[in-house]
Amino acid sequence: MKNFVIVALAGIVSGVIATTQVAGPLLAQENARNSKVYEQLDLFGDIFERIRAQYVEEVDAADLIEAAIDGMLTSLDPHSSYLSPDDAAAMRVQTRGEFGGLGIEVTQEDGFVKVVSPIDGTPADEAGIESGDFITHVDGESILGLTLDAAVELMRGPIGSEIVITVVREGETEPFDVTITRDTIKLTAVRTRTEGNTVILRVTTFNDQTTPNLEAGLAKQVEELGGMDNVNGIVLDLRNNPGGLLTQAIRVSDAFLDKGEIVSTRGRDPADGERFNATEGDLAEGKPIVVLINGGSASASEIVAGALQDHRRAIVVGTKSFGKGSVQTVMPLRSDGAMRLTTARYYTPSGRSIQALGVSPNIVVAQPRRNPATENEDEDTPRTRSEADLRGSLNNDSLSEDEIRQIEADREKAEKAAQLREEDYQLAVAIDILKGLAAISPRD
Image (cartoon, rainbow, N blue to C red; front, top):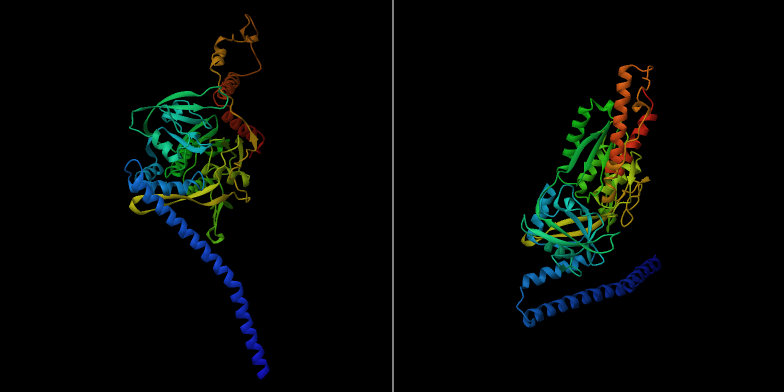
């Protein structure tokens, strides 16, 4: 028994020695890392004091610290940044759907400001700014090398004032200037209308108004068509929608899904991951859906398109989306400022990340660029003559007047559809897909 106790004690001592031998170097490494961090912080303090004491002009200490914080955050990725108290207040107003500015969502690429998308009905949209445009100068001043927040600050100004931005656009040989008048941007989150028996839901942003606007707009259009039985399908137009609130993306997806995962987020710590699932109820009552996307569809738009695509609830049509698959958390700071920090990536129900890849449409349809030189060609083209135009032509005696009126009404619808293809080719294709699905669907 004594020998057993001695052996057991020896085992314990050996275990302690072994643990000490392993933990010792790890502890030393951790201490070395901490020491390095403190040395770097001391270096920052030295530089800060030298700037305050020796810079050619007197500087504001608070501005220096804010610039250092912003530089630290913007070095991480294009979407992390520091928000001053004014910027944080402006962001809170924007999520409620009204703010001042030009009406463009921007990011930064190769040192220049890149337009993610213009917002429908805003000064930038009316001035012809397009998704993918690069802004190189503001009022003649180059913005190369500025942070995104600094460049955006240059574009801000009093409502009613003019700004001249220099734009580089793919397909154009030379940069060109665009003059825009700043205005109050009032966002209508969802615009609704019908084309024939198709309901069009144009979602421009994901803010607090989005889901209520969508539900009310859809109900109104369905009522005007005489009920859901008369609807052949829904087009959910997410083109040039830069995103917005994750909660709204989830609610819009849930509006058309009965069950299953909508999106999941995964951060640095696996325990922080979240999964969001649909609840029972489909506003479209099973009617087919086409989702329209393009290179200006980002973030929350991609969540909706990816969820409906993965569940085979919708056909996605258009061109590849922007590819912003990261989640930013806005964290309040002292003095009413805030920090926007990328904290997670989001994944579609099938487990794919959209980050940098975007959502790929089921049917790729590019929007042709409009050519002003050919816009009036139809007016100059003589109308084709038909048998009915010939003098003394025979009447069609096989149809009743009601049948003839129906044929003429159908022809008028077809002509309107042809006109829509000239105005918005992608939307016309989406509507044609729904018409085709309705034509082959079983009838009760």
